[in-house]
Length: 137
Image (cartoon, rainbow, N blue to C red; front, side, top):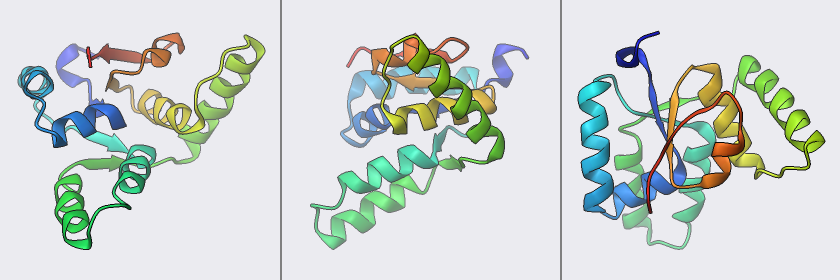
């Protein structure tokens, strides 16, 4: 697969920075879009985490933010992702390394799709086989 075919998946922290209009993150993702013109995606776990973060907002603000969230393609936690998740979790636990469950779900979905995950969370770099682009947040 050449780099032009790699799907980009945003982690929750990257999505939050975009919603906050972080100029540095917007510029970095804009550059990625030139190399990867397909739609940028999020995982169902990112959708859930981001939605949870909206719970304290007014209904109006929630609706506006969800409308912007719905611009992204959502990659679901399907059987192949679940199988990848089980292998990842087992391997990491045997090595004594802990990665939050929702982040393991996001990693497994990204790996299942051969995608590159854009994040500011360094623990993703501990997952062998996961393509990661680190944002300096």
